[in-house]
Image (cartoon, rainbow, N blue to C red; front, side, top):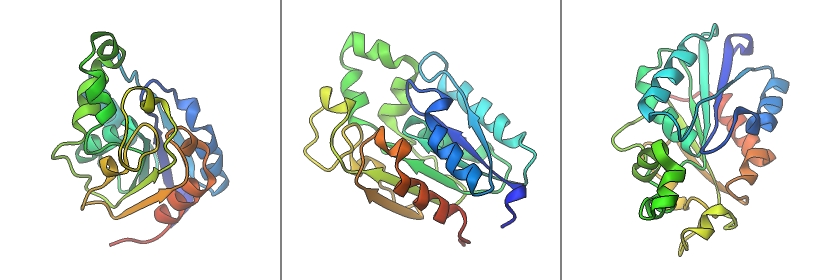
Length: 205
């Protein structure tokens, strides 16, 4: 792989901003990649519009190969956008509830909590549906159960405190890794970054 012709687009999660990926940006730039951070209003804009904007953003990058790396809702957005991306590349999902979020489903039942999600309520509660990324896809998930989601939903299964491990599993994933971290801690977890780098730098069928 020629890294001067390869880029990574980082897609942040719910209520977050591009700067939350500062550790990943620094890590991958040190590895020689071009790194871009995609910004979108997670709750104040229709999900389909965000998907259209992400596809345009990725397709407009000058590099031949553009990988996507999405955290939580950013991973759902990446999967649902993949069919409209013309660039070659892989996808890394970080703690993304691709099967739908129990926390989001619980929040939808309470008026004020549903308002907190607004446009994010449907994609988070439903996951990716029938969407499948047309590229190799890795999931990295935490199993340290301390996070915001515990205030909303009680998990009786392994979770990162906001998303359960089961919510991140699918037979179409090329790889699935579970590491010791929580939902926000994974954004600065060196093990997660190294797993993502190994996946993106390895040839896959």
